[in-house]
Length: 349
Image (tube, rainbow, N blue to C red; front, side, top):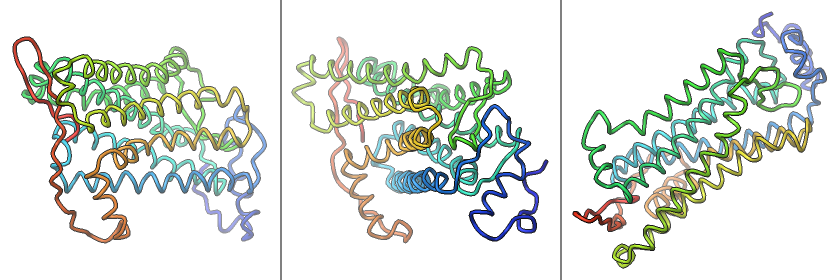
């Protein structure tokens, strides 16, 4: 049954009845194991409005950060800038699924049958994993600057290896989602509990693997930044030249890794603790959407040039074109030494 049938002719004009009518028109297309009782309009608004507001804020923050980096190329070193832009694109892709799939189902009771629902909702998984792997790639990149500067410099000097850490997150996330979907493990939006879910699917190895990855990668990131911090403190020569901005850089990614870990903890354990309550659906989507805002918020807080540019754009209403003032804040540098050479590596630009 097509979910694009004319609704105006068959449903009443009263909004509450209209939403209920849409929900019931294609009820046979929804797998019975997902549920049987559609939520009330009050429940839909309770879940949908906060997600709509948060998704809009996340989109605004990420687009503004992208705009800043697009016109202020000197703010970050070229390699780090590429990673941040890749992260922004994955965050915007992740949020877009809320707008074209999740919110129409939640707010208006739209029922999308399989396989269209699977096709439309699956990017939620791929973009979420890309965000996670992109942050891991940034952690590895920064770790190499401190611990293997020769290898890092060699990687960036060759076009064939320069984009490895940039491409791998997209490759792995796309491969995992496509392969898991082929074997029957895919994501939907449950129209009864109003949340993204893997219910009514056969996970196989991926059910355990994605659960492990949700804790493994944030913990791995945290460990890398902890090692960087220890190395900076141990090397007295580096410590003597270390600037406050170096520590702020490490702190900002400590925060990102901890927020990702918290988001994974909540997504995996909230359904077990809260069951199918409306709070579970709201909080799961709320915190996963909040995860897409971590990067722009942290950069605005900890990087003065980004913060000043953001304030300038905000004063212009985020829409009007503004001329961003070029700031002359020196790029923080960390002195990285080995036995045979000395190099100065840019940390955050």
